[in-house]
Length: 108
Image (cartoon, rainbow, N blue to C red):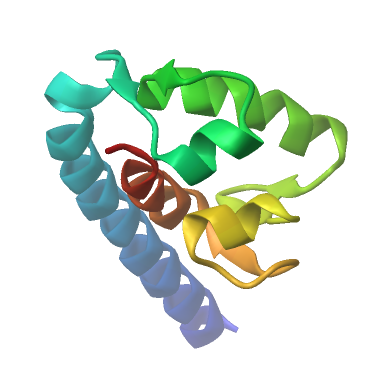
């Protein structure tokens, strides 16, 4: 019993460490780019309701939709048709941080 608990705690520690590393990487990417508006690619402009956006705008647009549809579970998001725009397979489950990294591809 005790060894099982130790194993679970070690696993949790590994997951938290990985999450912290991912957060640090994302903060570097988003530090200056998070709120700066940029022109979207033509494909993104055809799909989204705006021609310019920041990463914050994109998250503000998609997160409420994903949450309302019950597609967010912790850090995992089940993507719908927007997955193709981000370079993922439709109806695939992706890590939120990977989705945010791919959002950068939507800018010119």
